[in-house]
Length: 187
Image (cartoon, rainbow, N blue to C red; front, side, top):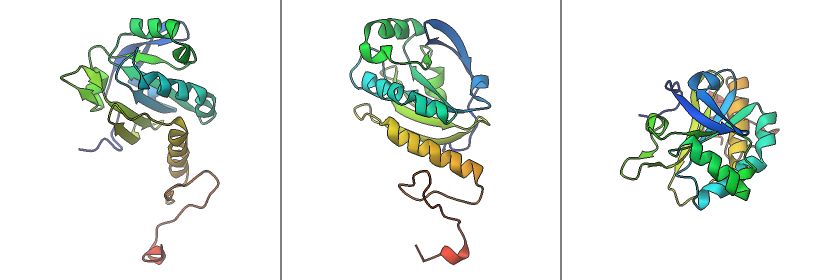
């Protein structure tokens, strides 16, 4: 079953954010766009490159009203230790959520049970708390924050312009489509 347009299931977890441990719940996702980015584990190889890339683009996400949440099955204590020791992770200014009980990874369908880690899963949540897009990668394939930004802009455009859709490779300011009988067979 697809998660598209489903509500985020209730959760409460502890995150490391700006030098503090904070609680994050499904209620925190309501009222704004959120991107939940699962990664396998702290102190690994591809993960810091992705989290650093998101950190490098964080101001752009913030301008779009999007909060980023990094999630792994590590604890919030591990997130703090990684933040304190990795130059790449020191750049991270968004919450890093610990999911040692695997509740979030299971709810979002990214848990690798036999390994106890998450797949690389990216989920864009609308202000209403609905999953509007998701993409799950093999753990050997890193993601690109620029591509996520493009998808966020498209999702926000569609949400703000009912009846219009964004074609492949659409970028902000480019033409969209209005599905109608007149377009059938003309694209």
